[in-house]
Image (cartoon, rainbow, N blue to C red; front, side, top):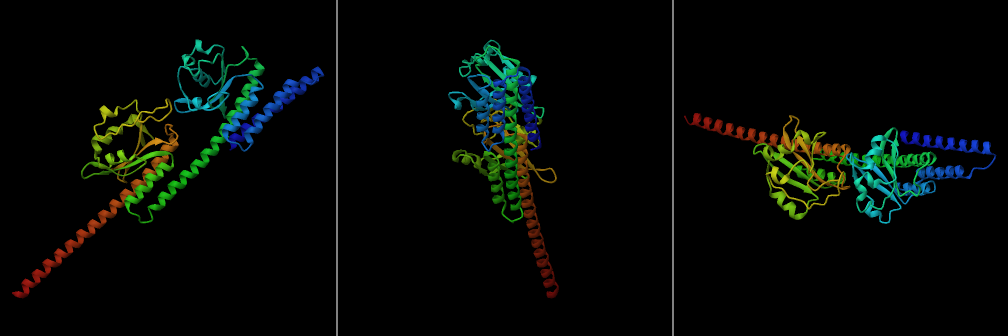
Length: 412
């Protein structure tokens, strides 16, 4: 919240500077300058939109509506920088918003968006199709001029604001300054919303982990605990999760617990067995490692030719750069306190269709760690029980032999 507050103060300072400029112009000319006053009022309205209790989309729409009165354009989009792409998260003026929202542009890539992000500077193209082939695509072929402005918060580029089909063939320095001011407000609105959402999500996920941790102290059977862990994984943002358990005596892996898996696939997987050495170690290559997990991307591993075990192919529905592919995989190995393998928590199909970020991966790792504790505890209890049974059998055997020996001595 401290960062966002500072950004608002910067915006207010800019508005004050603009007011002083208006006052100076009026003093020099002796007349009232309507245009600067109108622009100041527009900026004030846009700033107010940041602090009002509105959804992020409503805030952005209000800001972009005010911007239309400063510089005339046909349509606009707000794009956020992801791991390897810029994603359109909001739009204004598009006739079919559902066609534009969610589109991703490769970053870095052969597009003007990349140039704006890398240079951290506005870019105005009067005929963008002459430089970038992306404007030959049907969805963007109507764009005859394009303006991109970086969205920067606390010296960090978080995305860009793009304006399409500007009426003017050129942009004056004054207009560019005002557009930059509006872009800053867009950045602040996004940052505020992201901070709130992140805090709320972290609280929900922490509660989920704490609830599962409590199960370890309630004396529940292993299968029940593992079921809760798998269900908990779905609650932090996945449609499917599988708990793979390793038996070191046979080097075999089975899947006793899974959630979110269609019935047909559930039957196939529940009957399948895998080899830890042959089928799982091949997935734990260093090039796939992210934190303590392994992210296998569809274009880095061929499941049909490189994976010899049971493999259930999924229908290919891929939204493009930055999104989860049906043949992507995220696996989190589970180890005991001695570093021996216990199994793998395998998650699939993120709810938001995005590639999981590091924060999400570490939460899955925390759940996998709870699973490892449950499995190791269950095996220790089983070993203790077996040892106790063995000792009891030995005592019975000793008693039996002593009695037989005593009987033999007495009979003599």
